[in-house]
Length: 310
Image (cartoon, rainbow, N blue to C red):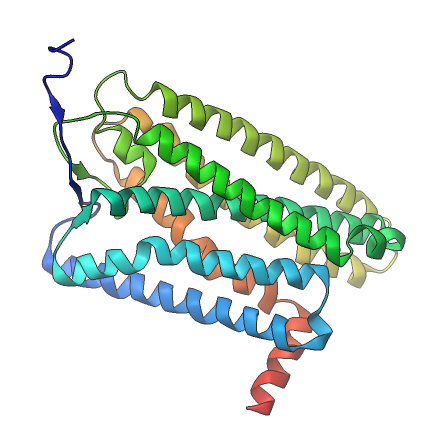
């Protein structure tokens, strides 16, 4: 037993070394991250404002969109500001508790967002396939309960992954080959054989995500079959244009995260392993306002009224 614990390192902090340590490149990364962060903040804050003040947007779909925007702001704020500060100051350190907090909140908000996307797909299914029962099924109480369940699921999801990730002992280096503390990068620093608990959690989470994604796909199969029976080609196009972006973002979000977790056993960072977290942590918060809201006719009208009043 003493021999197994001989290489255990008492880590009080980590070094986030996700990208090349060139000062010019660091400035470029800081500029890029700042631009994406600004776009995400402005877009999501605008959605929250419009869905709050405009009386024509007081429907379940926009209630879910407002919660999605809140989640996206929180999600991107967990990692990006710290990364920008590190790039500008050329300091890559993060405390142990800071790393624990990042893991918890990243998984918390990612889990909440995915669960809410499932709720939103159900909302579209009811609206298109069961329009006569929509108001009865998607009443105010039901919507609040579904959103609350999404936040609760994300909290539980974050808690179990923090417990699984930081139940291990760390051996050797404290360098995290990523721009934030993500689980795959941290597990490569763990002592051999101690990652089993978190591996189990990840496998169970992937199975759960796959089941949820299957339900999403099934709901859209029913939606498509219903839409194809609409006689108006304009009506069919309008419905498809609102449904397909949702599936696109869900697929992007899941596939990038799935590829990232497939690299769990990779001790040496690859370009793909560095790129995928950027994809699933930066793109959804910045693109969601465009895909889900700003392409919507009612949102465009509300946007025009808002800036017209200004």
